Image (cartoon, rainbow, N blue to C red; front, top):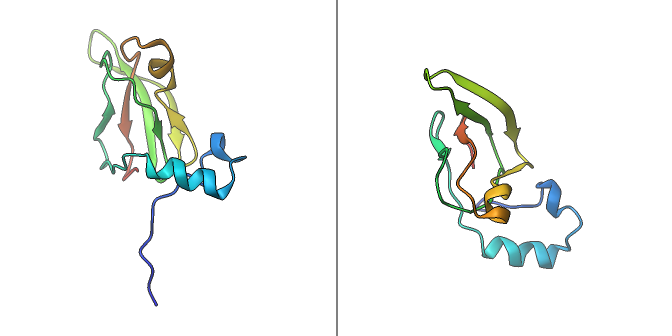
Length: 104
């Protein structure tokens, strides 16, 4: 019998101490998205304040110089989160985040 694979926050470090019941309740509130390689996940100076939890794949946090050169800050992968600063301070995004491969 084949089961449909459901996305989960089980491997996201910040949620490691949650009970299965609490984790499932949180997952029900998530908006699940998948990004393709090179796709913009968060744009520099966007006024959004969502937090992104990477459950699969990887992404890069970058900012572009005035000349258009990309400066990478860090790579994030499954189990990481990004966007928490804007969620806390409600300021525009300080960097862009782009998918390095298929990322959800």
